[in-house]
Every structure is written in C-alpha cells, then in structure tokens.
Length: 435
Image: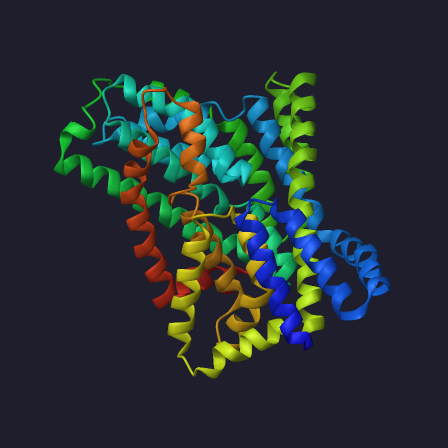
C-alpha cells in the first residue's frame, strides 16, 4: 500500500469513527498517531505526539482564547450583560415584531462579549423567549429569532472560530475580526428586516405590544448597557486603533470586565469562580480538538494524501466558482452533523490548499467559512443552537416548532452566502481600508 493510499485509508477511518460518535478530538489524535505509525514507525509517531502538540499550543495567538472566554463568562456571571435585551426592547418594541427584533439586537450585543453562539443562544433564550410567548408571539418566531440571533456570536468579535482559523491558516486575527464584524452586522440587520417583513405580512405572528416609553426611560435603558459598552470600547477601540495586538486585547478585556464589575458593584468571588471554571473546561475541550487537527495536518503532509486530494480535485479543471460552490455544499452537509470547531479542524488541512490554489483570499475564506459553520448550528438533525433553545424554554415548545422557526433565517443566510461569493469585497473592504 502506497503512502497516499495509507493516508486516504486513515482519513476514511476518521470519518467512520465520527459517525459512531467517537469524540472528534480523540478521533483526530488516534487516527493521526496510528497513521504516522503506519507510515514511519512507532518512534516517529511518539515523537510527533510529543512535539506537535507543544509547538501548536505554544502559539502566542492562542493565549487570547482563554482570555476572551473569561471576559465573556465573567460579564455573564457578573450580570453586566443584563441590560442589553432590556435596552433593545425599550427602543424597538414599537416595531412590527419588536420583541423579536430586540432579541436579535440583544444577541448581537451579547455576541460582542462572548464570541460563542451557544452561550449567546442560551442566555438570550432564558430572557427573551418567555417575554415573547407571554405577549402571544408565535412560538416558532420567538424561538427561531433567538436561535438564529445566537449565530451572530461567532461573527462579531471576539470570535473563537476566527482565532482558531487564524492560527491554522496563519491569517491576521485583527483583519479577520474586521471582516467578521461587517458580516455580523449585515446578518443582524437582515434578520431584523426579515422579522419586520414577516410580521407586516402576517400580523398574527407577533401581536403589537401595548407599551410606550418616554425618552427619559429610553435613556435610562441605554445607561444600563454602559458596562458592556465600556468594555467593548476599551478592547476593540484599542485593537482596531493599533494600540495593542489581538492577543493582548483578550487579556485587557478580561481585566476590564473585572474592573467594570468592581466599579458597578457587581464583582463577586462566586462569579470569578464560575467564570474561571468554565474558561478552563471550555479551553481544554477546544485545545484537544485543535491539537488533533494539527496532528492530522502533519499526517496528511507526511502521507501526501492532502496534496493528492487537492490535485485530484483541481485536475477536473473546475472553475473557481464551481470549487467554492462545492466546498459550500460540503460544509452545509457536514454542519448538519458536526459542531463548528470540529468541522473546521477536520476539513481545513485539505480545503485550505484548495482555496489558495483557486485564487481565493484566505482572509475572505475565514469569514465565509465562519458564516457557513454558523448555518450548521441551525440545520437539522443536529442544529446545536436549536437544541440549546429547546433546553431553556417551556416544555410545550417542540423541536419541530423551533426548526420551523429558524427555516426563514436559514434562507436569509443562504442568500447572504451567495452575496459573499459574488461580492467578496463585503468582507475584504474594511480590513484592506483600515487594516
């Protein structure tokens, strides 16, 4: 058996392990280790296990992952994010479907401090869905808007997916953040417009909320968002102005979150303890997957199977547009079954060379890929955000209702994906202008 055949065989074994629900981090490490052993012997395989994880984990950029995670967890546990939905509701309740629109904007605000779709959906689901159902909103619209709004968490900085992509692809994190910010804001406004149009056409989806607020009440609601705004201005103002690097931004964000909590009287040892524990457990899970992906990249390079797969695809002579459409379809299908980080780490060793040889910019692809992965958080049968919402809402709301609710948002997302393919400047303009 040739080296390429060994490589392809072990890649097939990897997919088989994933299909039988072996945790993806363990599957990546096991297949890579056994594959290198089959190629070069057990001494080289053990050497790779000792060297590759160390070199990968010692990458300085990765230190921002636990820092940004801590910032998000601490802001949540210290209740610094409580005012986001309330402020959005006060200012937008008069719009058609105003509470659903407020939920989406609340998700956007929460996303700016967490970088996690799941955390965003869980937090806003607990707050916003009961409010909407209490006012007679259609359950599909109520849950679908929050589940879809949660996906903005991976697009608006700090995005953990983009940080990990930057490490693997050796792309600038700051420029990825800029491109993701643009796409995240566009997504937010598309979702809001979709809700308003649907409710205009069918008012029974969201009965008008008979609440009016004075300008003084609206201004007080805005004041409740100042803790989060102070943190965001400090972190991203300094980051985009070039005062500090993305890696330093994570540490500054963690420090600012504690300082703002202390100044607002919301600092507590319990919040600190919970945030530290969740940061450690989440970082450990992410590192296990990313180290496995790094080992897989080394195995594919040693076997030559990655290059062989890339050359085989390019040999068909497909146009770059057809290649990117094929990659899009693959990620949409994989997203139905795999969580985003695992899906990205599993495929990047093969897909990245294909992207660069097809003439696409790595910066654009990083943001484009993030958007595709977040669509997978909504699609059946394993739409993670849908299951998160199901876990925090009333028992009488079924999974079917939530999946029906997110369908409209998936359609809107696919239209945006098409726009990103045909007008890549949507992603690249801001990084190139101010990067």
